[in-house]
Picture 1 (cartoon, rainbow, N blue to C red):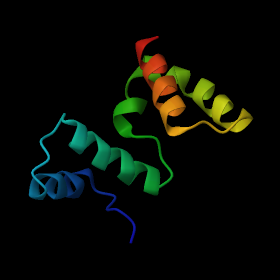
Picture 2 (cartoon, helix red, strand yellow):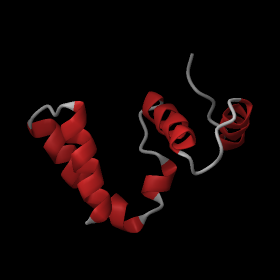
Picture 3 (cartoon, rainbow, N blue to C red):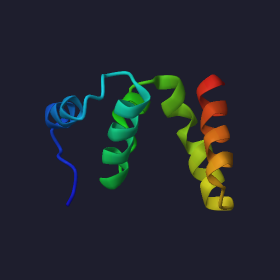
Length: 81
């Protein structure tokens, strides 16, 4: 089953799961919902600096597979850059 499209519904699901907005659990839920729909999470797209660096991520992912740890490091580097 696909996640709901409506962000308010996702927020209600997060609330039912006692995931407060801004916590890692809430962010993970939103990230998984976006990924299941083949989208980049909205909070990343709304950050102009992060959005501008997404092509770097895409090129890296296409050129060679990364381990989970390597991917986390890459994402962290992009966020900090």
